Length: 239
Image (cartoon, rainbow, N blue to C red; front, top):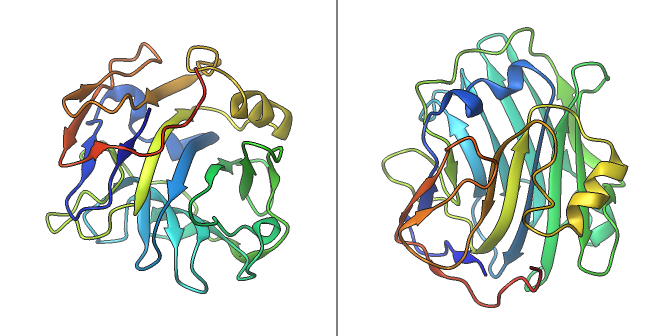
C-alpha cells in the first residue's frame, strides 16, 4: 500500500516525540520507498525544519535545483549546514529518481566521515548503492540546533502554505539513530515492514492507504495524522 501526496497541502504529521527530536545531533539514517509521478518544484519527502528560517532542523527532498529528480538531504544550524545533493545527470546511476518507478532512497549522516552526508539509491530490481556523483556535498555545521519545537512531516513541509508536496506516492520508510552501512541498507531495501524495524529505529511507517492515523511500527509511538493525502496507486508490492 501507499499514500499519494500530489495535491497541495497533503502530508502526514508525525509530531514532536522525544525519540524523533534532534536526531542530527548524532549519526542518523533516513530511508523511504517512493514513486514519483511528476516533475516540478522541490518535493519534500521528510522534513523537520524551523518554518523556513533555515537555522534549525533538516530535510530530505527530491530536488529540481539542478535537474529534475535529484535527491537532496540537508541539516541546518546557525553556524552552517551539512548537505548533499545527487548529481545532475539524467541516469539512475548519478542519483536521479526516475518517474513512475518504485525507488528506494536513503541518506546517511555520519559524524565520523568527511564529507559526512552520503546518499544511496536502489529499485525493486537494482540493489541499493551510493550515488555515483554529487552536485553538492559539503559540511560546514559545527553543532546542531534544537528542532524539538517543530513537527516531523512526511510528504510535505511544515509551513502553513504547504505548497511543496511530494508528487507521487510514499509507501514505507524510517529514521534510525545511527549510520547504517550499505549492507544494512540492502537488508532494509528488501525487508518486510516488520523486519525493517532494525536496532535504533526511532520511526517506522508503512502507509496502508487509509487516511486517518498511520501507526509507528518502531514502537516509539510517533504515529502520524494524515491531511489530504489519498490512497496511492500503484502499491508497493512487498508484505
